[in-house]
Length: 305
Image (tube, rainbow, N blue to C red; front, side):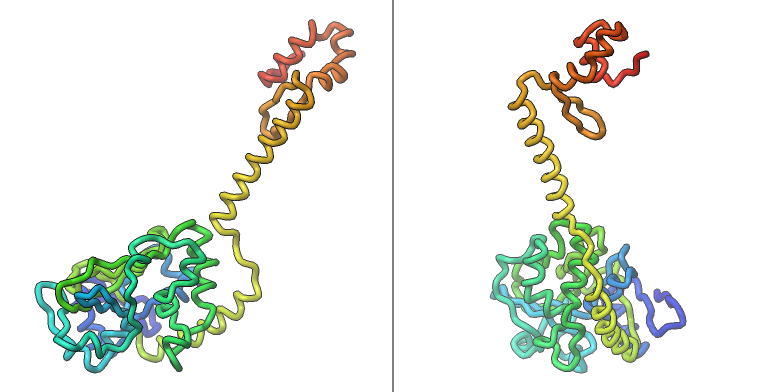
């Protein structure tokens, strides 16, 4: 089935991926790429769900893989191979001629990344459509960094992993899902083309071009604003605060072996010598029976008249 989102020239297609790809082509639309959803999420949309994208994964028996941008929109797509038991199997020799960047090192994938690893990932730079890989159809150069620092890593310490299947016995093409934000925005390239729970966005060609141009405006505007605090920075800040509190406690007890630590909301530390000075008059006046009771009251937090 297809669901019209609004009067804008975009539509969500849900169901069997292969069938929805055919409908998108019949409707004269193109499948929204990964970069489109990066931009959408930067503008605080499409955060809560996953989408299958127009960027496909091509694999061969040697373990190599290619990121083929806008694969289904390619005019020769149907000549590349055929469907067989849910797989789009490539014809002999087609893998080598497919457009796209080749990757050979699988040791780096199938795990989540830290921020710096994501920013250094060639796969993610391809998907963000940097000029090096997209030519005239480039999107904003800072799209990946803005997306990482503003959307994903303020929520997760490790995220945006590239997940693929083991090397196949035959060269094949697989669909790709970009996970929802709560799913760490992973790039999941293990999807059979006959998967029944596909979710794709079909865009009119002019809508895709408008989004590409908007990426420059959005990233330029955001570059003037400070980045939000990252999860790891919040964790470090909490750790530092606890270490400082412990260091302070050790310093106090080392200066005054008789110190008592008052664990209250403000985490103050009060020594016996200070208690003697402050409550000497009260003790002499008979309000308290002695220093031991003062200590007991402070440690318990009870109120006494």
